[in-house]
Image 1 (cartoon, rainbow, N blue to C red):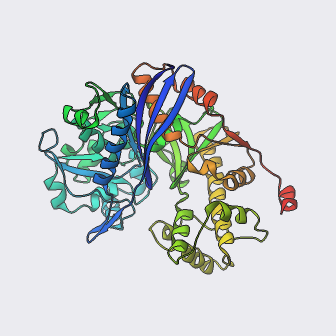
Image 2 (image 1 turned 135 degrees about the horizontal axis):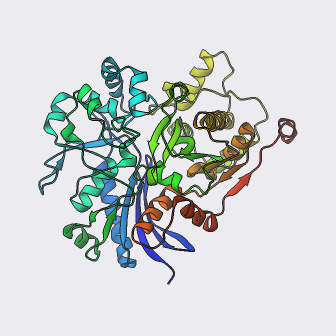
Image 3 (image 1 turned 30 degrees about the vertical axis):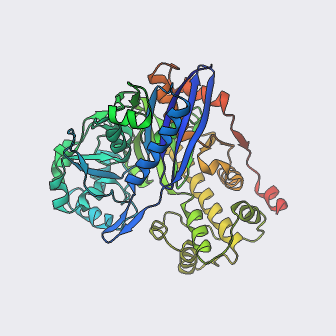
Length: 485
C-alpha cells in the first residue's frame, strides 16, 4: 500500500464534504466519502448557520470513512472565515453553544461597523489588523452582538474551532481562521489586546492560539466510540480557513504568480512573507490573512460564483428547468456586448433576485441590461473575470510580486468560459485546478504533521503539481476574440 491516510472535513459556505486522502512522497490521492448541502436558516432574530446539522453530517461522513478505512491517522477541519459561536462553560464537560452562529450575510453587521469606527478610524484599524474593510469581518459582528450575549459567554470560537472542540474537548483558535477576525495582530500573529480593550470586548473570550500542523488533541473517547475509530486518532490543526488550505494546494511559484480561490467567494491575491500595511493596500481594498507556515495571503475578497448561483436560484424559483452546462454554452456564444457591472456593489451581498439587481445596477449607470438568461450569465462571467484580472494585477503591484501567471482553484476552475475570460482580460496564462484544492491543502498539512510527507510548502506544492496537472488557458487577443464571435 502506498502512503497512509488522513481525512479532511471541509465545510464550505454552500456545501460540505468529507474526503479521505492517501499521501506519500509520490502519492496524493483522494476519495470523497460524503458531500452535503450547507443551508442557512432564517429565524426571527436573523440569518443563522445550521452548525448542528453540519456537525451531524461531518460525523456521518467520518463514521463511513472509519468503517472502510480504519487506518486513518488524523482528522482536520476547515471552513469559511469570519463567523463564530459563543460558548458557555468552555473547558468543561458541560460546555454548550449559545444559540446558532449568525451568518455573515445577516444585516446586523451594519450597526457593528458604526460602533467600531466610532472608536477606531478605518486607517488606524487597517494599520492594526491589516484587513479589508468588509462589514462581514468578525470584529464588526462581535461589536453588533447584544451586550447580554457576550456577558453569557466565556469563549469565542470560529466555526472549525467549534467542530474541533466538539471532537476533542480542547478549546483553541487556529491562527489562519483567527486572522479573518480583525482582532489579530498580523505581524505578531497574537490577539491584539489593546484593540480588544479599546472596543471593550472581553479578552477572556479569545482562546489560546494554535498553528497549522499542531496537534489539537485526539478524538475524545465518546466521539471515537460513536465513529468506530481506534483510540488515539489525532485531530490536527490545518489551515482552518478554507482559503488558507486552498492556497497551500495551488501549484504555483509565489514569487511570480497570483492565485484565485473561486467558489462562493473569489479570493484573489499573492502569497508573501510579511503583511503589507501601507496606504496603497488599504486604498486598493486588500486584506492580510494568515497562511500555512507563517505565510501571508495578501488578497482582495470579491463576490464569486454566488452571483451565478443566486441567479440560478431566482430562475429556479419561477419553475424553470435549468441546466448549467447548457446555459454556460449559450453564454459563450453570446455575440452582443453585455454590461460589465461592479461586483463589489453592496446590493449583491444578501440573498435575493440577482437578475433584478443587475437590472437595477444597469439602470442606475445608464447601460442596457441583459435581455436573455444567456446574456445575464455572460454578464456575470465578464464582470467576475474583469474583477479577478484587475485584482491579480493590483495584488502584484501592492505586494511587489511580478505576476506572470494566474492560478485558479476551486469550483471556478471547472468553468471554462470564466477561466478563458480571466486569461483574456488579464493578458496572462491561467492555470486551472485542482478543483478540490481546499481539501488537498487540509490533507497535506495533516500528512506532514503525522510524518507521511516532509518538507516546505514548495515541496508540498510540487507534489500537487505532479499528481494534479492543471489545465492551461492562453490569453486570446482582442482581434482574434472578435473573429471567434
